[in-house]
Image 1 (tube, rainbow, N blue to C red):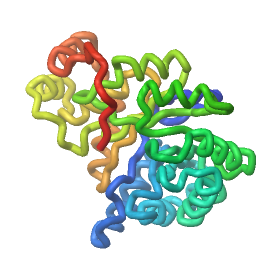
Image 2: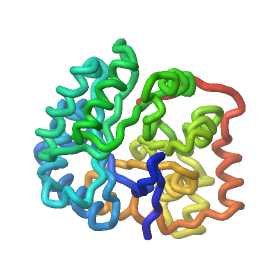
Image 3: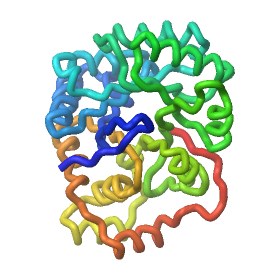
Length: 278
């Protein structure tokens, strides 16, 4: 089974992708991580999210080693450090990421979080890269609603394709105003840490719903996120078993009773909260 989410330009991407944060940090896990990424792609989780920050480029190199021969099947996402995000700096950083990834293009390039570089410089660099064919889409990460409004007020700022933020069943703050804002602008949200790196709060509710569906609490939490409209989830999995577990969340069909009980245990926000980051 495959769920898709549509980008503003009309391109459909998998709702369930693969993250790579903290990969490539231990040599004795390299083969296992490579096999996990390859299995995920075989299962249809072809959206791969990485960043120059992850292992200072090592994660990008791991992705290249694992998936170089399957490049045309992938929707490849990477991110630029804020301190590299000047107009020329973002171009140079992208070139370095392309070399590490062994590819001539990124499908999506994100500003990892806001820094001191003016947004208009970053946008100008992204647009230069897009015109040159080095990136196909660009977006941002860890932007709150006021950041998005500031971005959209800039020339070409409305070309932003997505915003990647911390969002899961226990961190629902974005639902107060950021998620509605993005839905109004027909922009999908990318959810990182969708199961909190396996550290979601213990919950009898997730346990009981899991028993009902023959699933683990983590699969229920991931299924809940995949149930949200226009959300792409990018869990990291360092083993093939973990990849299979994540993929099985696509088969879970939560009903209205399940959703109501989850809302009672993990209530949606009633007031504005500062955007969280990990």
